Picture 1 (cartoon, rainbow, N blue to C red):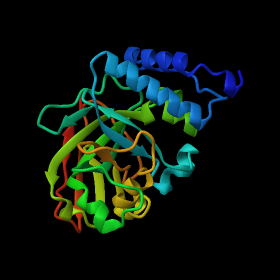
Picture 2 (cartoon, rainbow, N blue to C red):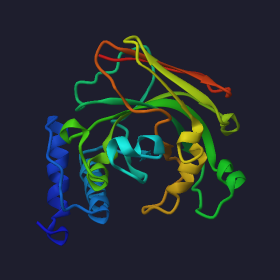
Picture 3 (cartoon, rainbow, N blue to C red):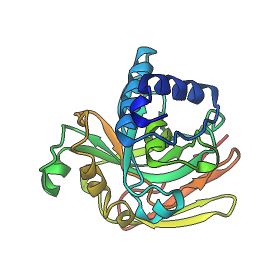
Length: 253
């Protein structure tokens, strides 16, 4: 099937059904980015029709150190919903609805007003109401995490869930180093420089997207370390150095 012949409405329905049924799908070899973002909008409309509400965007593949691992060499974005964003608490998070989940420590911004593409760093920071550290749980509908960049866009930007920690004022956003570790012995290290130089640069990267960012949205800016498989029964925590933002901990079931 040629790209021009792809029915983005039908593919959106297929991908949403696979997501709901926790059913893997095969990659779409002829899919291009323009069509993939049309699918993203179609899925948004379908999810809104059934009562879900967009809370913001996730940016993926801002961390250049993982590009070779996945064969994706530029950032992508997807929507986050009120059904996928959760406040971190003492209750274990249920991984069972997600396919091949992986954990990503990230920085998330809450927007007080809509930023503009031509803003400098000071103006951009003034648009941010709060900053928080959280875990994005990403998933792959494509077996073995084998896909193309358009596949990732069409399949929800690989977004599964966002587990959000405490909110801090925007002034808390500084460069820092991070350690991610679990009770199974996995340890990963990262830095804010990994995400296009800084989380603020990652936010800037998507300021020209359509539809544009609006006041009240949250934007999570990409993983600071490698994305690591996560399984029920595990506890994951982070330690941050160089910032007033504290590390977080999450339990999984």
